[in-house]
Image (cartoon, rainbow, N blue to C red; front, side, top):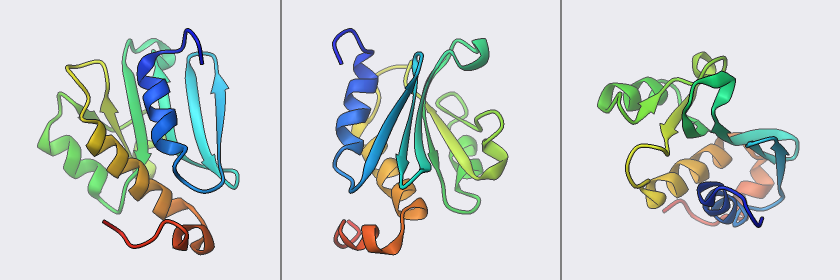
Length: 124
């Protein structure tokens, strides 16, 4: 992980707490999967947009609620936003890593099999 963006390093550490995750690097982007299904993305200048972001699978309608709450920080990611994903800009101010951890955990719970979700323990 030497030379990696420190935001990706931090996100990797957060996601590593979940059972059976795999991280795939694609240039400056990363996909975090559980049993082959993506639950978190780290995007850096995706399609030349100049944005560094964390994207997660949100509950029904939640992605639009986050954007309405603060459109300078939250957005609907290209291609996956219409399918319930939300994005949080990591390049605007100091990221709230506690919030990122919560979003990642919620996303994992939406994507992972029930047997793995049970290993997380009760929802905080």
